[in-house]
Image 1 (cartoon, rainbow, N blue to C red):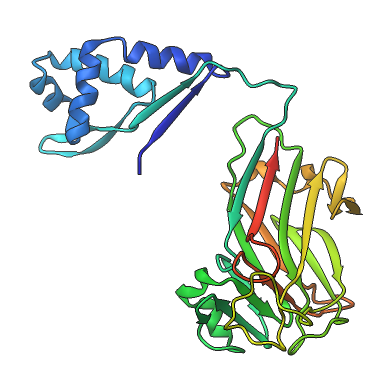
Image 2 (image 1 turned 90 degrees about the horizontal axis):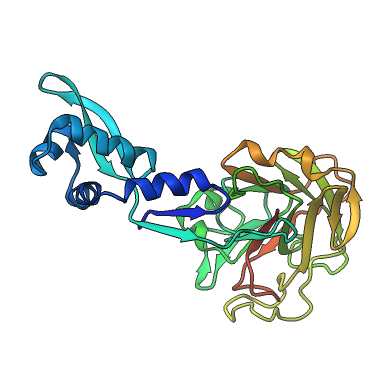
Length: 306
């Protein structure tokens, strides 16, 4: 995969270091050399007919610009520094971001890409081509092919997903949201089967939505033909949002948990867990629909506004 370095006017010092690094034909020759392989400082000096001190000087500037990497490795006489290329492309943007306009990052996660779960029969996973493992067998939720699932269900418990935390350094999040198609889980289906479905972000309980039922009285718009009638067919599109003044479900305030309460800047990922509390009034399980099942052509979508 290509490695791309982004330069913006929000970090002028970084741009200056980049400009200084590529302003020398010698340093450009070093970058070309490192495209072929990794080399020690002495090997680079020999290849370009440079004094070793001059090669070290040029490499230091390239490293400061984050264009190469220098690592100590064992050599025939102690240790030596080995140099490798760190970037393939450099993108330089001269358009400053307006502080008056919010930006949004969006990630869509397959429903089968959970990293942890607590599952109880009735339960199962389905892909457009058939069942994953066996229905009502918890081991099926640990099979590698679960990643292809377009529908998962459990009579209680939870599933946890980890989304990449791509919030730019120094930026303050103002809204985090997760939207998904979801409903309760009853044997077969039951239009009045309630379930209190809770979302946790980074381990913090945010808000609970009471789903009115498990829907199967008609076919889902995208539900594949192999999926039988008499079973859950579709869900409702639900959006949990965490803002500066609290948490919301489908636009209605649901709790006092604010975006500053969930530790967004602390990890490389954002943990989102969806399921039933053990003490829920209606512990009615849940069905999660991906883009190949149900009424909405989407998986689980996370948005960060900053």
